[in-house]
Image (cartoon, rainbow, N blue to C red; front, side, top):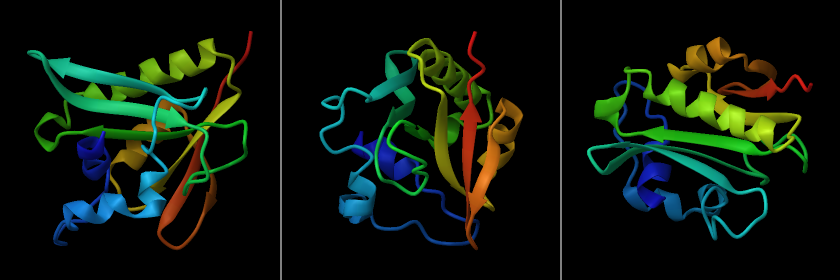
Length: 145
């Protein structure tokens, strides 16, 4: 998960990538530390030729996109060479379906305003519920029934 956490970091065009050890910071470790040990931890992966090339995961945590203690926060990561083929959208659709199946009312995420993924999130039905100078907080609300 370390590799996918690092690849989930959005790097604006023209800026150098941060050092790989940035993922050891507490505000990033909240996404993966002891993953799978909390009851709300869920993950899906995309695989091509027996190689995992992407992942989407959720957990209830106090992260950048935290809404409340009943709403899981979402993170998604694809290796660069697999972006732009609909794999991320498919991962997200499958995770949203899984979360609905488990009875969650909504899921949240935080995304930098200049991140190209904002368009994907909006197309999937996420709405902006908060923002600061650099980021949106977005939620996807499940229609129950």
